[in-house]
Image (cartoon, rainbow, N blue to C red):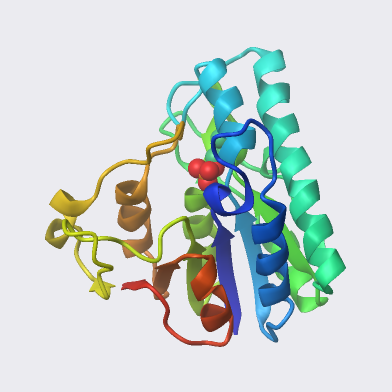
Length: 243
Ligand code: IP8
C-alpha cells in the first residue's frame, strides 16, 4: 500500500508569522506518521516560508521570474522548512529523506509538469520516506514558477499508483456554505459555491483549487486537519472523502 500525504503549510508553520515552524503541530504529525506501516510519500506546503517570498517577488504558478535572487529566496526558504520537517520526522522514528523538486522537475511552455519518479519509487522500495515540498520549478519561456504541494500530490499519486491520498490542512474537512464538513465530494459543481479562497497569503489558491485537483485522482483522497491524522494513518476515513 502506498500513501501520499500532504501536510499543509498552515499545519506545519505559523501561517501569519514569516518563516516560523509550528513545532507542536509538526511533532504531533511526526508522531502520527511514525505509526504508519505503509509506504509513505510526504509532501509539505509552503506556509509562511514559501508564500511570502513568492508574493514579494511576484511569482505564482503562472507568473514566472528570471531573477535568480527570487528563485534562491523561495527555494531556500522551502529547503529550510523541509529540513525542519525531515528532522522532526526523523526524531519520531520515520525514515525520512529530503527531496527538492527544483532539482528535478520542470514545466513546458504550456505549464505541464515533468517530474521523474523512478528515484522516489526506489526510495520507497528501500524503506525510505521521501519528503517533498512545494517549490519553484523552471518553466519553459517563463523562467521559474511556483509548484504547489497540491500539484505534487496529484502528480505523485498517479505516477506512484497510490492507494490513498491524504491532505492534512487547517480545517477538519471541506466546508459547505454553513461551515459543516462535507462527508463526500464526487463532482466539483456540487460544491463550487461553497468553496472560498485561503485568507492568508497563498499564491497557489485555497480549498477550491485543492478539491479540483483531488477530484482528478485515481485514488480516494481525504481532507482533514491535524486531529484527523491519526485516524487517516490508521486507514480510517477522517474529514471529507473526495473521489
Ligand atoms: O503551499 C507552495 O506550496 P503550497 C510553495 O502547497 C511555495 O501551495 C514555494 C510557495
